[in-house]
Length: 386
Image 1 (tube, rainbow, N blue to C red):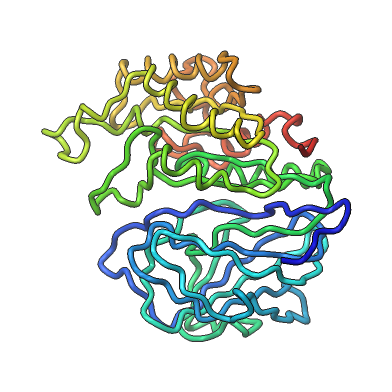
Image 2: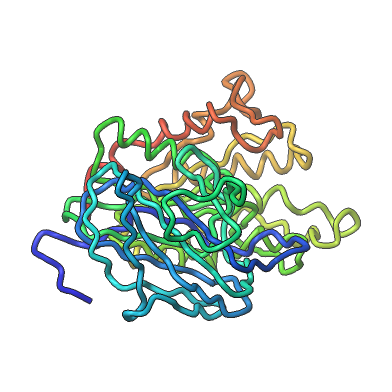
């Protein structure tokens, strides 16, 4: 690794979680190119990349990878690993690339292209949506091509293997981590990134660590629900590994409340999985807050959103949500609370989303509500690095 200049540091400028992908009939790919565009929010002189096979059960051979700006020149720079163009990522592990000399200006978009020549287990990735989260895959070796062939290419919101991008940048810059489940895997972190940029907060990157279906205290090991990912105790210490992070917003816990239905209804969702609110608060304190404090991070809670009308809704679950939310709002263990619930609930019936804020399933917000969630994040979280 090269030396870091005075007044510079490594800061994560883009990141997702890595989880078990949805178990479909086909779980392997061969001779495939993946391409992900990423807007870089800081100017810097070098990049480095983390690739993850955390949830894979077989070796993944990354044949080659490149980074290029999405400009007319589109010059590909090889991403290397100990000087080599390829790397084998062992199951359950992550690998870091070499530092890549790559000058980039704030606001520019780069494309990361990966090619996998051999049969590859596609079991390490995350489904992410939002206006800044788009990817493509092509059948064939097109990693070095400026334009992917239209007839062999499709869009995807599955982000495989690419986990984090760091940039060597000014000391003033920092990262804000958004940790959670499907609510955070969807649009509000992207809208938060857009808000920061438009309001002139150019010294903060929004790093998303979110997996749909995850819970604080439990995880599924059956293939039906494996894509719901690892439990918080396992996820958090790995996903909070974010260079230059100053704070984390934790919006997690609704799946602990809504999932159990009894083994007579669903053998994988017994009533024994239903936690008490005390178990949820203790788990949040022990798993999230204590670990984040060891890293010197500020910790902000994010309240759970309305669920009236969701298929497992009942008064007991609503009471749990309200009790947990009250703890999230008032516990002195946090540095503050982002009251997402207040931002999106119906003022006349707080059990439900406000008009226009329900996606239709009574659990996930609409795009308008995701924008409101982004607006609810206090400006204090953008301003200073640590």
